[in-house]
Image (cartoon, rainbow, N blue to C red; front, side):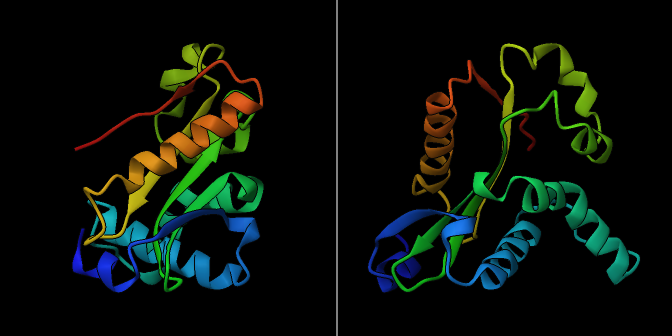
Amino acid sequence: MTAEAKAAGGEIRLERLTALPDRGAAQAALEEIFFASTTRTEFASSADRAAFLATWTGWFVAEAPRDIWMAVAGDGLVVGYLTGCKDSAGSVDLARRIPKYEVFADHFAAYPAHFHVNVRPGWREHGLGRRLVDRFADDCRADGLPGVHLVTAV
């Protein structure tokens, strides 16, 4: 366990974004973790940076906030998140935002849900990403969905 996890009491709870008392602070933490996790580090302007964030997280925050799961340490620090979509085929606006989304369209019937997951540096390699994925998969299973797909990168 990292020093950060020990300092936070080592207890991590998973909460829906919509259940957190300070949604604005949680969204700010999501943004911080997103940019600490992405391989893109240079932007032409703050507007370009904001557009990049909106491409990958904007739809989820606006259209599926109940399917955003946050990993919260005992001291309240958000240490990871998962943004989920339970209807990939029906999310036309999302398909317009995310590059190459249509490449996977032939798999949407069997695997209708997908997600993105990121964990704060210093908190990785302790199973938090897996806990977030398992929680979302359980949620999808409870909704009767037949499967979940994801695409990974280096």
